[in-house]
Image (tube, rainbow, N blue to C red):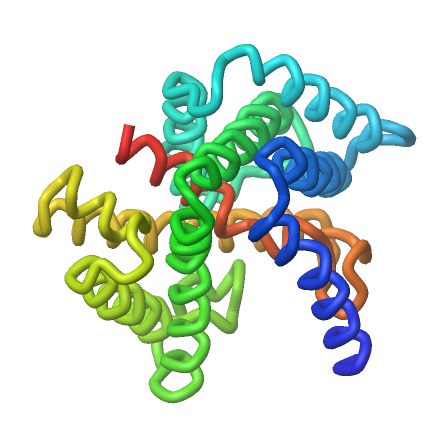
Length: 270
């Protein structure tokens, strides 16, 4: 299992790193587009679409993405729609735990998923236009929150964050992830290393106090995105969103926390 996981990670890095660092924006956008379409296919599977339903849903997401390019690089209304989705649907789902596979809620998630994936694509591409360091720093917010949560949770975790959804997550872990983002983000903003980054941009746009609040909001939504997908998988009765990435699960398993963070971050800087 570990060998498979390592091999998959190496292959992914061999593709993603050169494209992110050296490829033109168009090629970078095309690659992220493929990732988004596969994530949409997994979203459809988790919502229990029958037969070729998940494939059709992925095609609709792809077409929506293509047509959305006429909105420009960073369409604020699209980011606002995605932000509203996560602000309302995320907490509602985690608190009420509605059945995701039926009724109006299922229809809402089918529509909302298209908005979420298209907004995520636009946010990544818009961030890349600001520079490699900028897009990597935006991803770093989620990575730091995840890494900090893992180690703090292992060392100090006592109080379950959402035991019925993801038993391994703790409040101590979430706090540890927040601390990691606050420390690294503050140092990056204060030193201006590799600027422009999302850290320097937030401080420059909002000031220090509101920038730290903004980072706190992003960390919180990274947790919401992670738990939201965990709830979908639990209700779908699966461990992973798919087996597309051997040893890692599916695409959604890798980008769930990014889905809310990316458009909300761009909205903060709009």
